[in-house]
Image (cartoon, rainbow, N blue to C red):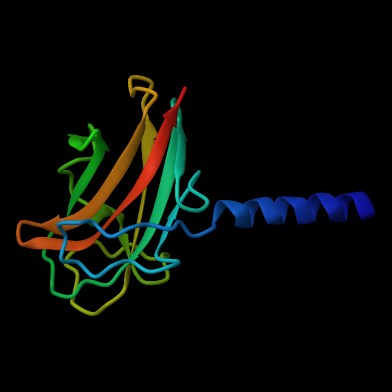
Length: 160
């Protein structure tokens, strides 16, 4: 019985370890309000650097509270290598609306987004085998032509 309890506690600890908030930085050119501690959780990014393994999938959960109304939301997801932004194929420029949930993250609400209300963005992304093994900065923005609803950057490393 003690062994089962110990295994259960280890499993719970591992689960909570996967759900640890990720420390992110504001995007330099974005006027969106900076995301605070606990606003972003990315799998394999326990603190402030993501280790992304090729042929795997990472997930993201982000709390956003837009400062103005947004009818549509577009993804601006790029890898910045040696200060050169490179769009993530299949994610850059796509609609973020299918990934918008209410504040609890349980009910899909889509777009439009109302100013001052809290929403949860949930998505996953594949680390393709064609991605080079390299250190980079990930830029993750959600917005429209007038600006961002949310944006962050974080250092990452893609591994084989």
